[in-house]
Length: 373
Ligand code: NDP
Ligand code: GDR
Image (cartoon, rainbow, N blue to C red; front, side, top):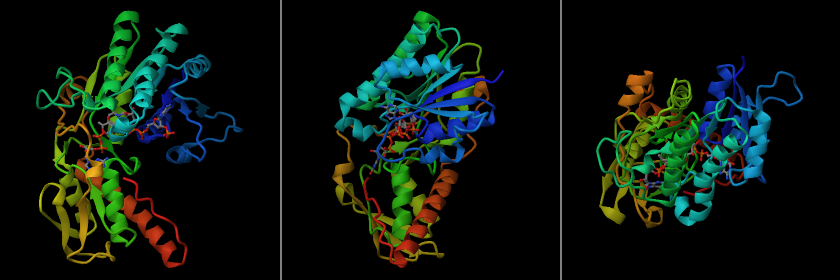
């Protein structure tokens, strides 16, 4: 029997990798996409199937996590075996700017989906995965963080996700729904949104290497994160729904690095050796040496990174380090891609894009580079 999955957030980083993964497993995959004034399906265009063809296994529905009747109708039509709730306003800094919207989508959106499952009598048919987050730990109470570490959220995003975490547990306990939380630590890829720190760095430095930008402006580069690859993490999202009984799992690598480390590796991938000097808001990174031909626009002495206070958050999560022992022991899951390998992949992809861009500019096509951070 072909299994059917419904993914909210299918147009995002994780949604696109999960859709690929489930299609490879033979699933019929349904995704909810938002109406936007420009195309927002770039991450899934390569797996998009013409709706006019028969045996189409990827189907998209217009919808929004803020709209209960829409969610209920889609669930009723699709009757999914598995729901992956990946849709969210997922940017921590943006959640300070749009706290109410973030709560509506990230917290209430999760409740709306669970209520729709219950309302439609799908409690015994539909398994539910909730995209929970290491941001729940916030001001960390224990190092490393496990499934039992207490939460202390530090942003409107994390507080909204805390509601979503507990309502998922509550619907499991109250109504017997097979519902799980994956407490995922940061995971990245070449498909990562451009304003998250890793992608901002790989894209920004690749643009600098090709002469498209002058300098990278950063916030708190002392922040420590446990970074994995999104491909490894979506595999675990599926594994969690294949167990006999629903449980919550921490998904992490168990290794921690600073944002400064990530800048250093990305620069090294481009043949740039950096020297960091100064401190606090006056810290800079200057190019000490250039090797190879990946950064033709850069020379020793160039300052390629400065600090800009606008990228600091009203309350920061300084350090996160996960302990994925339970996922390893119970499900045999281990991450296969290291943070450094992932960084190399991201730099290579962004360099290719920057080289294409520079070539267009050299031929008189003035394509603007977005400098949004
Ligand atoms: P992205 O920001 O890349 O994707 C978010 C997705 O949610 C997009 O498809 C977006 O649509 C969609 N979305 C946003 N708002 C709404 C809405 N109102 N209604 C319906 N859909 C909406 O996030 P990731 O793929 O990185 O993350 C997936 C999930 O995992 C998120 O819930 C995130 O909070 C969580 N998470 C992520 C981690 C990470 O490190 N990546 C770690 C832990 C948890 P559109 O494309 O139109 O913007
Ligand atoms: P995070 O990811 O907040 O951990 O949330 P992000 O990459 O945005 O920040 C990581 C750390 O880097 C610091 N930082 C900067 N961040 C950004 N975006 N831009 C900057 O210029 C910058 N300079 C320093 C941040 O302060 C922070 O400490 C991500 C999201 O995917 C969430 O949805 C998810 O739940 C968590 O990861 C786990």
